[in-house]
Picture 1 (spheres, rainbow, N blue to C red):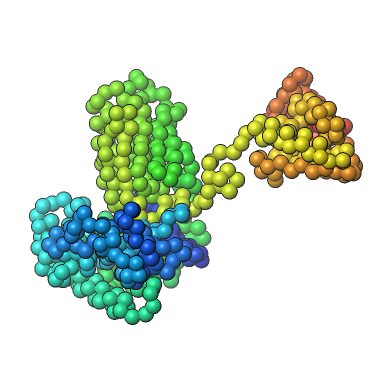
Picture 2: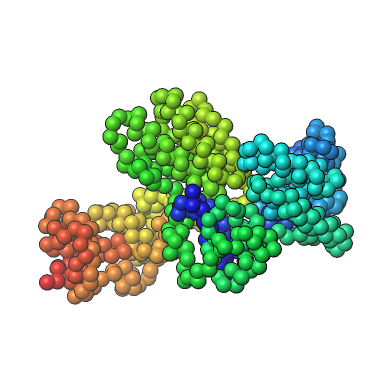
Amino acid sequence: MYKEIIINVGEEETRVAVLEDRVLVEMYIERSSQQRLVGNIFRGRVENVLPGMQAAFVDIGLDRNAFLYVEDALPSRGGNGFHHGLGASIADVLKKGQEVIVQIVKEPIGTKGPRVTTHVTLPGRYVVLMPTMDYIGISRRIEQERERERLKELAARFKPEGMGLIVRTVAEGVGEEDIAQDVHMLTRLWQKILQRASRGPVPNLIHRDLELIQRILRDVFTEDVDRLTVDSRSEYEKIMELLDITSPKLKYKVFLEERENIFQDYGIEQEIERALKRKVWLKCGGYLVIDQVEALTVIDVNTGKYVGSTNLEDTVLRTNLDAAVEIARQLRLRNIGGIIIIDFIDMQQEGHRRQVLKVLEEEIKKDKTKTNILGITQLGLVEMTRKKVRPSLSEVLQRPCPYCDGRGKVLSEETVGIHFKNRIIELARRTSADTILVEAHPLVAARLIGSGGVNLRELEQKTGKNLYIRGSQGQHIESVSIRPLYNKEEAIACTLPVKPGQVLEVKVEEPHISNTNDGIARIDGFILDIEGAGSLVGETVPVEVSKVYRTYARARLVK
């Protein structure tokens, strides 16, 4: 597998894309206005202890207090890293006003503050130092038993007394000198953190984790990466300097490409756009629908345009196999965390179900984020979890729609039309003006006017007022402006978007409902009846307005 990293450095944000066989699989974005918090260490003060929730709120100097669970506050037991007193109450461990050193393990998301732990971890290139836990662990991705034993022996030899070490995947095959150097560097860093914690105000930031590019070099740029490309000369020079110290062997894999838009050239911009959509097309012609809600993410698999060539079972299997591969990629790319429910297309054969699950499990192995597949429920749904540490791609790049309040839907023009028809009737009762001007989205305006102006005439009869309805693309579909006018000429000027003799280009949308020889075009919902344009549906044509009425205008084709 050909693996590469593309780094785009901008004025306001740095973006890192990870590609496998030229396909985008992971995205990291860091903006100057949104400092990353995970990994930062604070000296904080306990604000509230909540025995009912077995947690505490800790003031670490941010807008919102951090959340500390009891298991993240319990002191560790020597030798294996497990906790003392697993039945202990949070009130036995922490008191209000107590000062604690905590590390952020989960970014603040939505209305929730950051989650913190007292069990600090300091990642290096080859090992992770755990100053508060006496424990040795080896990455589960290192599978050869002999190599695991070798690394375990090295970790035991270099581990500082009373502290813990986790050996990272990248340490596979690495000599003892590199590991010893890594442990020494991390131990010195922890001593510096303790010195900072012993003085200064509370709350206070006492250690900031590395910036994005440095973290990528530490955590992602490993021996299995074939190429790293960066578009900034200054960052390229910094990368080469850092690799000189940490991993000189990787320097030959780093390239500078000073392009105007490197993500555009590599096709990454288009992939990011697709990663923000609900629907994801599969190679076979089927598609996924991905819905992220607060509690969980639901992924639905559909056959779509794929009809297969042999029988239904084969069609379903092929679609589900393609979906399993794409789902694993989308989880990494979108950085979806928490509970995930997958609704594969129903499979009759048990062998087919096992085949799809096996492919999903194999693809998930490429994901460094801890993921567990829990199996298939009685309803045939696949349940899984993925650790959520940082905000998803959607949470970084998007915000809830201020118009639909995050529902992802808006009211239909029929619903809005009925609601505001009643509002027009109410205003007509209250005002002494003879004329009312209504401004609405073109779809709503067309609904209020009705075919041939039938709804408008009926509304005028009910209210006893002159009504002028104007369509406007700038008007939100759920919002309608209604105001009385005491000058009828002003209403006419406001409402009619065309005038006799005006020449303009319009798109013929449909044939006239009763005279199919004519074509219909619309300007902000205002109807143009174009003589002789019934056969030109879909075409853009020049027309001259011949006569203007209150609800529509007549026009003829310009030869």
